[in-house]
Image (cartoon, rainbow, N blue to C red; front, side, top):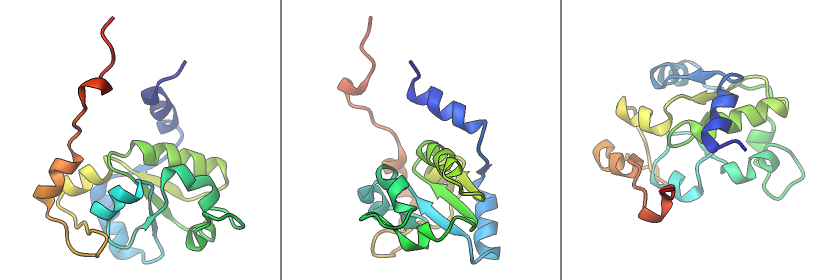
Amino acid sequence: MKSYNDLVNDCLTHIEEVFPWDLADEIAENPDLLLIDVSEPYEFSRAHIPGSLNVARGILESACEYDYDETVPEFAAGRDRNLVLVCRSGRRSALATYTLMQMGFSKVRSLKTGLRGWNDDEYPLVDDQQKPVNPDIIETYFTSRLRPEQHKPKS
């Protein structure tokens, strides 16, 4: 049986990742770049890269195709566009990148280190009102805080 880490590590050998500083340069140079944030809507509302679209990981496959309730037309029309997928840590976006490659997306990459790394490098984030997010305040959100019941049971 594979773990979540196994799945992520397996797909990392098949996908391309981009570092935050390279993505920042690319955003400035390439207006056709499409950023897809695969975080959950409540996460996206707290902080996301300006100009990104929110397509939660749970609806990714139907959102990128026409004729579904979840279809996001700009995303569905983007099979040949340069896409970068984003999430909080870069793990969900890595899995999503691999999935989209299997679905025929030819120019799709994942943001290595995710929004955590983006924030660490002090690139801008906005909330659902398009207002700038304080990087120091959002840092606490990006810090994992497992509850006791979420830890692996001791044998």
